[in-house]
Amino acid sequence: MDRFDLKILEQLQHDDSLSIAQLAEGIGLSVTPCWRRIQRLEKDGFIEKRIAVLNPEKLNLRLVVFVMIKTDKHNQAWLDTFQEAVQSFPEIMEVNRLAGEYDYLLKVITRDNQSFDAFYKRLISTVELSNVTSCFSMEQVKKTTELPLGQF
Image (cartoon, rainbow, N blue to C red; front, side):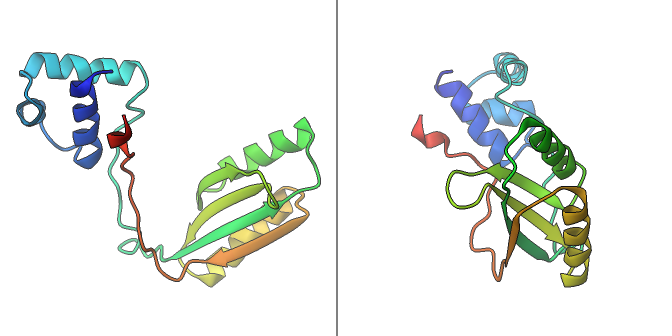
């Protein structure tokens, strides 16, 4: 990975709608080498996929809840059940396994309290959990999908 690859990644994560010609011009390459680098970055897994970032408020998805989960089960069967369960809930945006007091942190997005409650009831009926704590987001202060590539 060289400085051109990093520039390509920086530009694409900022604005994936740029044409190859615009991208190449912006980073100081000609079109064909720029295109080849993008293909290689995709093949090597640096670019996972290209997506549109939607506005949740326009789609009436206004309630963001961070759900902290504790379990007293740590066997493979429970882990498999839990992982399968969280994959099946479209409301779950992220799942992180933690070190510390809680075992998992889920980021959940729904329309309102009633839809979150319905999600919660489905979740606890699907997988055995010892403790579930929900923290409702009051305000999103920062949101980005851009990785800090300046650290390289």
